[in-house]
Length: 332
Image (cartoon, rainbow, N blue to C red; front, side, top):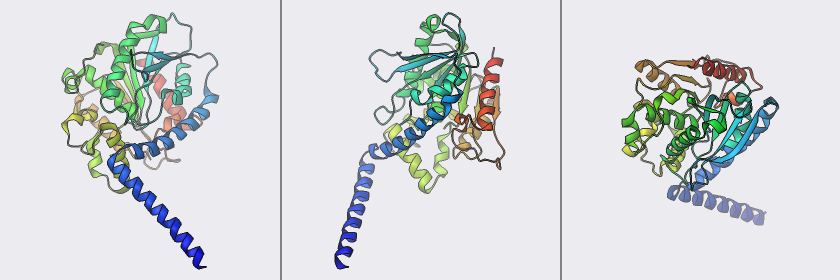
């Protein structure tokens, strides 16, 4: 019995030492926490990829892993189309989510194929994840991807005058920021960006469950604040992300202008980041920006969590898909 107690005590000691070691490592570097979060998020993404496969139309063709930025191995994009090249179609440029530290265009490829089946070109943009690459690398990559699509529009079947910037979660933030920077030269200048596409090329934005107002992090406590701090430290390289002026551009609502493109925005009723979407909507309304929303009653059953739109087997997922298609069809 005494030996059993010694063994249990030894194991508990090892566990405690491991937790302390992890805590110290997490304090010294953003990598430990980012690895844990990435594994969980990517596992969810893999399950989503499988779940959306049955909904992919047979007539969609894809061209994969096209390099859009010289010397950047992460800068790859996919083009999904429902017709053969040669006809320019309204083009949705979708940036994947994953808290800026996980995910990939590959994990949402089936969902993008489903959208393409409705009669448009859909581009999935890959970018560098954190902490290997920190802010504002991702926004600068997307700007370059848009230049590439403009220069190769004919061969890819892209309508470079009808680009719709879209994204989910962190990808929604990146797309909204890039749209905002093209619409506002001072916003672009604040991060040293020099957009090489014009505002009239961006017909609209489609934004799901994004992070648009980092001031909301100030009110978080406990595990929620720990999660956001871990993500933002990975993304920015610091825990001072709320007060360091270098990162003010992450909050799109602080830089939005009346020239922001027409926008479709949606979020689930049980999404912990719903406040970001509501803040964005209020800002769009204040500036008189044309926008459409898809929101749900607080007591909606079943509760709709983060990135609910990917669940195509559910009524809400199908409603979101139809709303995307209607929004794009109505754009000039």
